[in-house]
Image 1 (tube, one colour):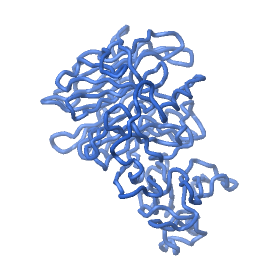
Image 2 (image 1 turned 45 degrees about the vertical axis):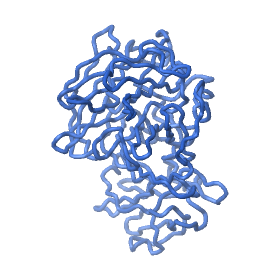
Image 3 (image 1 turned 60 degrees about the horizontal axis):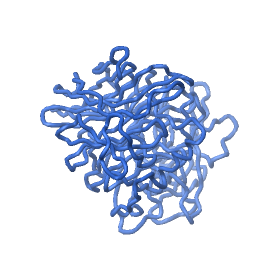
Length: 484
């Protein structure tokens, strides 16, 4: 299963179209003041991985009767993982869905992408693939099916294929419609947000919640086309991950968008016309699926309710995604959760999004790391110490700011990671990723961010205190971040 960004000429323009206008769908302004939204993104936690043969779809989960959670990860087969919370998903897996028989629509695999509860059962939306000729000049065809489980996702009954594209499979390309997220619109309908592979745009279908096997696609202003082989009017480039934000009464999508510079949050009151938040939730350097690559990869982002695992969320939710570190390939896939909180201010804030700059420590060696990104590999065992500040995810308009990168030196048995102004990694250090932006001068609601150095451990870190909290000596002031 791949939802990599377009690889062919001309598709870039189509993908960018989704951030400004939709074909055949009027752009309606949301009643919500998007400019008044304030967003804080907490530190990333690696909850599963690394895996070479898993984490190839959006993560979904169920809260069980005893208060524990069952998560679902997929790559051809779908696996169940049990844990005490959504943060406890590192345990053993067991297969609960397998690929179908040769010649079937699911012969390449069955990826569970989203779940919703109904009376006495769980409904699952299942991505399917056939024609398993993967590779640069191969082909595959994508469809979606509905499945039902009466034992909390351990066994599933296939209720049939419900969404397919009108395009015929063709050599050298990906065809069909899939990678869908199913979300309860809280209006009597289930909605599916899907990727159309012919042009990489998002389409929408819906079904009555009481009859989830009969889907209708949105086309030419109405829900007129059948889910199977019907035509659909695209709504833009929003990706296939969706959730319903109860307190706002809106459908939300999250999309890894390199042209936007990060993970884009969009909201819709009518489930069709979306308005983008102007700043990314996370900043990224790229979205390169040709691995290994110099930049890291954030993929299959979705939104989860931390209290029950569903995609019916509140203004506090989990941003969940698959992460591959810079320089690594698909053998190094990690599942990452970050808590996000939304609030509505009386007037637009100068910076809407703040991304946590967390300080982590290795207690045994007294080594510190300050980062806005996930810690993987040897750093996975580090413990979170504090949130120093929240960095900006793009430069603010009309106010001087500084872009920072994270540079690392991995000597024998020693790690030193340092925040530097982007473009100025020292000799012997390798640029790993963009950390974010800091204000150049103090602003209301900000705290200073100092670069510090622990002489004994020979490690750099960050602090909001000029005395570096007694952990080391202050090198200099980097700038000012949003107060945690």
